[in-house]
Amino acid sequence: MRPDGRQPHEVRPITVEPDFIRYPEGSVLWRAGDTVVLCNASLADTTAPFLRGSGEGWVTAEYAMLPRATDTRSDREVNKGRPSGRSQEIQRLIGRALRAAVRRDLMGERTLTVDCDVLQADGSTRTSSISGGWTALTIALARMYEQGLLASWPLAEQIAGVAVGLRKGEAIADLDYGEDYDCDVDLNLVFTGTGRLVEVQGTAEGAAFTRAELDAMLEVGWRGAGQVMAAQRAVVAPRLEALGLALP
Image (tube, rainbow, N blue to C red; front, side):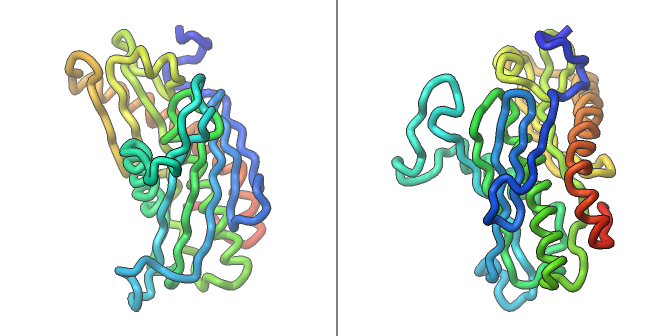
């Protein structure tokens, strides 16, 4: 039994507050247990420099933690002149995951930037950012479609991130900080709605793990992703249906 009573495949309670910030094209406050991430998707009428003239758009992401998102204060990275190596690695992961969701050839030469700001961290912040980021991105695309900026619906995939670990020989999904600190294997998974994998990041914190243990982690990860996707659909599906659109 896990400390909070969850079954191995169960994720923490998820609440999603859409339109949390009024100005971005898409905005959600994503809560997964005590991890809280603000995800804002913003539109710019220009694509990445290397795509100019191609007719193709771009999706990118930024990630940051507030100074007191954890139990001790950290300095703002802007005061250091650049994001930390950890932040850069995470925002690249988020960007790759979200680009897998969109047919950028249908976006036009525009950029959607998804800012993921961790307000409170209790483990699994990067996967929460991916899941919340996809939700904000989808809301932004729906608004663009409603405003006549998109001739075709470019959303190609539902995307969800789940952190999985191996703790005392048991595969568990959606680690909180205590579980993450105590786990033997740390695995971050990014799934599509059809069960395909966009990204797999895994590290043995102690002893190497077996193929059977990896399969067990993939299984609980996919079951956890289903719960995350249900929370995403509850927010975005009514908006899409009102526009005559559907999830992939």
